[in-house]
Amino acid sequence: MSVSFFRRLGGSPSVISGNSGTGPGNTGPGKRAAGGRRDLLAAGAAVVFFAAVAAVGAAVQRADGTLHVSWPPLLATWMPHVGPGTPAALAVAALVVGYGPTVAELLSWRLLLGSAWAAAAAWTCSLALVDGWQRGIAGRLTTRHEYVPAVPRFHQLLPALHTFTQHIVGGRPGYWPAHVAGHPPGAVLTFVLLDRVGLGGGGWAGMFCVVTGSSVAAAALVCLRALGTERTARRAAPFLVLTPAAVWVGASGDGYFAGVAAWALALLALAATRRGWGPAAAAIGSGLLFGLAVHLSYGLTLIALPALAVLVCARTARPLPYVLGAAGAVTALFVACGFRWWSAYPLLVERYYQGVGGVRPYSYWLFGDPATVVAAAGLASVAGAARLVRRPCGEHRAVVLLGWAFLLAIAAADLSGMSKAETERIWLPFTLWLPATAVLLPRRDVRGWLAAQAVVALLLNHLLLTGW
Image (cartoon, rainbow, N blue to C red; front, side, top):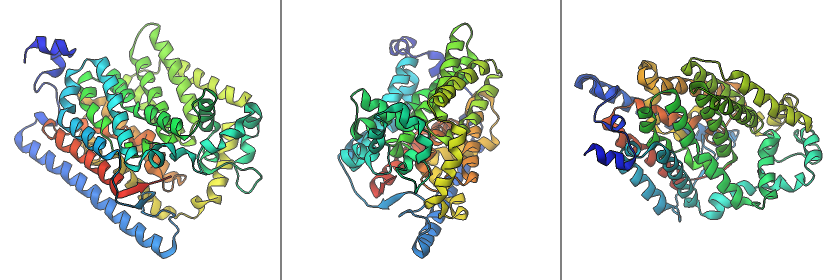
């Protein structure tokens, strides 16, 4: 193809050129074959690990019911089914597997960001619609444990915030539903504000989570390009779109939380790598989003590990004063409204152990939770993550450092014991980034690994009825 053809598409010949760049695909034939076998072994070991954890979990659940999930380690029910989203999900998967890598190289950068976001939203929405509109999207956030039923209690906003912590612990009059009690008030306030602007109800809430959760694909691309190379970001794009974790993004509040955290990291990366007045604005925006993130989910304090990786990768701490100042301003606003994060968290721990969190055995979920990561991140992520231990940073420095940071965050959350079960949903802010590690896999195997990602997602969504 001619250079003019690429220019008409908005691409860059230097980005698209044949075998340019480093990577596993440019080593000798023997090393390539050995690397490919190790990738398959890593994926196979993950499948065996998941199967073993599932078998043990089924036995424990039958014996004493302490796991409190129907299909351990996932919160799901065995229910083979198809639905209105099935044809769309198959079509999106086929298009991304067949054309995603090529299109990601040819599109202009801005068009790629929009296309990645749109494709991720289409993939997420089609998977959700396999369960139908009501069960897959509109009804997800309206169950008795969720945020939407609590919206009327915020008719008077400031009094509700002032007394929020009084209703966290169960057994007291008017205690919050599980998901409202289990998160800072920023989570439920989001759906209160949607209601106030005329977007109330489960349908709007579900689609809001789908759209914001799908934006992680675009945010991750911005972050990877700022910290590394555009070529690396383009190679990651199809994997960030076609992730099995999309099954849980549509539609859960944690998908929305993941979007907020992802853009906080993306803006931090821009602030750390740009010059002039723009970086200060990006750093302030990043700080505001970090401040919001920790008031959406207590577990998002662990996003500090990927944030540190961003600064290490950029080799600067320049944005920190702006970021910390803006995050502090968000915290001060919540304090002024009557909510103190550090006072609420001990009450959450008490509420957690009042419920099934106090019954579910730590010894099982220490392994069960990582097994949910295998399902949500997919086999390409497993193979890519396995290469982190033997991959020098080089061109893919950002992928390597961020990959390790997200894995450490997951490990810390797992060891804490505050996330026993449902981590396929709760850990979305971390697992949605893991498919980016697939850029470490050989170029010749890209479509095969993309197909593996799609197969995992389609099997999960069509064989199981997921719930939370």
